[in-house]
Amino acid sequence: MPLMNIKDAFKFLHDWTDLLGVSIAELSRKSGVSRPTVCRILNGTINEPSYENIRKVWNALEEIQREKLRAYLSISQMVNPQVSGVQLTNTVGDAIVHMINEDYSVIPVTDEHGVYIGKISRKLLARMFEDAQKISKLSIGQLIKKKGIENIKAVSINERLPELLEAIMEEELVLVKDGEKIIGIITWWDILYNLKNCFTRRNPAGEREI
Image 1: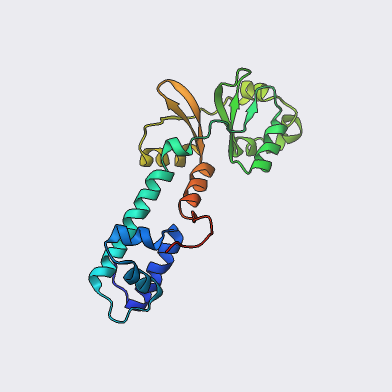
Image 2: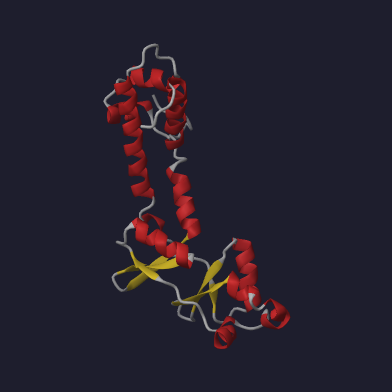
């Protein structure tokens, strides 16, 4: 727990609890501090706060945050079994429109059987800008014959989160394998979406439970 004045500590704990969507009951149970005391700490209305109680609430919030991250940023939670991409018969123009509409920096390419064979990136398309008129009408298959295709790295569904993030930073999207079977793809968007959900869950009424 970092050093800060007591007023700032109360506000920080209040905002942190709100961000995580934690109920007073859960925070009390996790911290071992009574509900009324937790309420007064979060509202900044406790007259003589105990440092020990504040530390317990802080530690409980840290543990809840770790649990949420583990739950929502696991590969099994984030894997997307049906990622929109392009096929060999689509044109490069289709790929460009698709990237713009979906706000993708890379898109996967599948063959006629729906098997992932690689990816096309904005960088690749940008290098062909001068030939945009001609290139846009080429099929993805013809483009691959001319320029080749970028491989997609694969990770195991049992991979640890740090390894996944390292692969995503390099590749922007990765295949996910369960044994030898490809079960889907994870992109930066999937990670950000799950991270957002991790910190924006609320109870059905949209308020913190007491």
